[in-house]
Image (tube, rainbow, N blue to C red; front, side, top):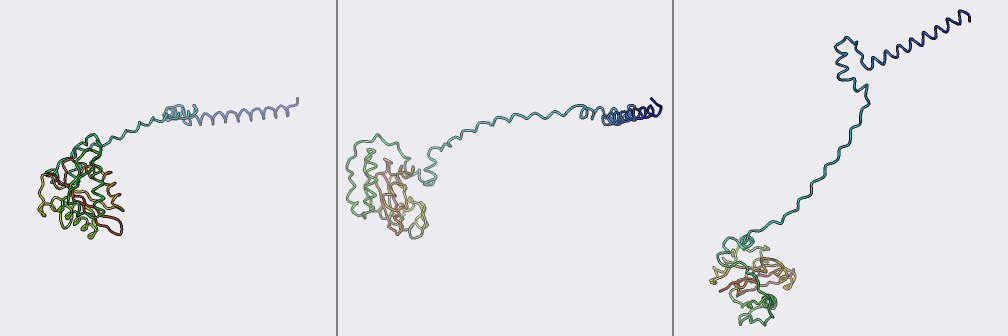
Length: 246
């Protein structure tokens, strides 16, 4: 082999050796670019060496927390008597009793409604028959009709229709109790009132019987006398029931 060929081989070998040395130096510099005797060399190894030397472990997904079971809503309890206080006002309890538990239904009897029932108009007679049928089913005494209560009930229905309001407190007459006392009505139990606006008298009766307070007035054994006032309008009927008891 001639000298020129040997030189070329040595040149290639030295060149490759130099390139390998540079590559190794660059790799070491990437791992820690500071000299071994430098304070930064120690700092680099402490805080950055792991990120170059170790693959990053992907974070493990966390197991979602089991949602808490929904709380079962509790039915609010109503203190005894609160309905009556809200419905009739603070004076109601002074003049009438709370609704009593109805007795076991007995065979209905034909109600006796008294001579004053003859003053009722057709719709008022229908309402009287309906409420007395309900009382007969429960074994309760049929209502008798009081002419003064009928007059007051008609006045209240007419007042609600003409002044376009719906309330147990009239702007003109006050509460049912106020109205009765001003008219000279006197009874051991007084002040209870049912009012309704409906398409028909039958529908008004259904609304009364499906309402706790209205039904309680109709089925209260201490209520023995009733006044019914019905005003017919282009929209249906406006109904007022007034109750007393001795």
